[in-house]
Amino acid sequence: MSDITIATLDRMKKQGEKIAVLTCYDASFARLLEDAGVEVLLVGDSLGMVIQGQESTLPVRVDDMVYHSRNVARARRHALMVVDMPFMSYSSAAQALDTAGRLMKEGGAHMVKLEGGTTQLETVRHLVAHAVPVCAHLGLLPQSVHKLGGYRVQGRDGESARIMKEEALALQEAGAQMLVLECVPAALAGEISRLLDIPVIGIGAGPDCDGQVLVLYDMLGIAADAPPRFVKNFLTGAGTIPGALAAYVRAVKEGGFPGPEHGF
Ligand code: KIV
Image (cartoon, rainbow, N blue to C red):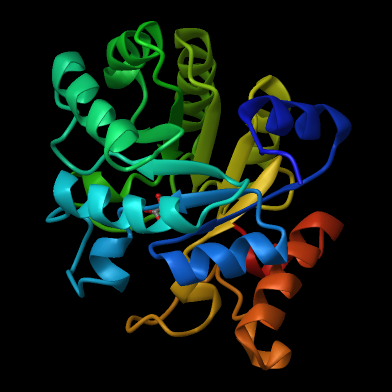
């Protein structure tokens, strides 16, 4: 199998083939996820909660991200590897470049992900100008949980939906090559996916995005916290971890997941 690159994902979007993404934090799961046909391994800062037992993603350090990325990179054969920049590691464009440099050089990342819209445009431009591929993240921004006052659906009213569409377009214009939309009404996420040329990956954002992502431990039903409404447990029914991963990829590709019960 040839390497999955951003060009592969662009082609999939154009051809209407859904992209299967899962979070991944270690070598053993990296192998299983690839065997199941997952195209993008996201080393998410959700590892703060599901691996480290933290209350939020805020305490996660760049060193933690580098450690987990290296473990994933050692086992990766062809999937695209996207790595989260943790809270306070991209507060200026210069700091973002340092962080991205470490994630790519030491961690093996192919692309880095950052949260935010208008405030991140200069940083996105700076990273892209230095050959760092960027995945943007709009909607519910877990690193802003205290500012948002909790984990809530975003873009429900006309004004916030308008701002999100504008920010998505501006991030694409700034050079972002992928966008994650988290906890966004399905109709708005579908509209943004059609509006943009870059692949849009949804989590709690309905079926009309170009691809789907879930936190691995959530979709296996092994996370300590109760799963959010947009999560489906794929282990129940499949019986084995490889079976659950294959069922997830199949459901994403065939449009069986997410269903209306997983959306807003
Ligand atoms: O950290 C993470 O796992 C993420 C996903 C929720 C998209 O950013």
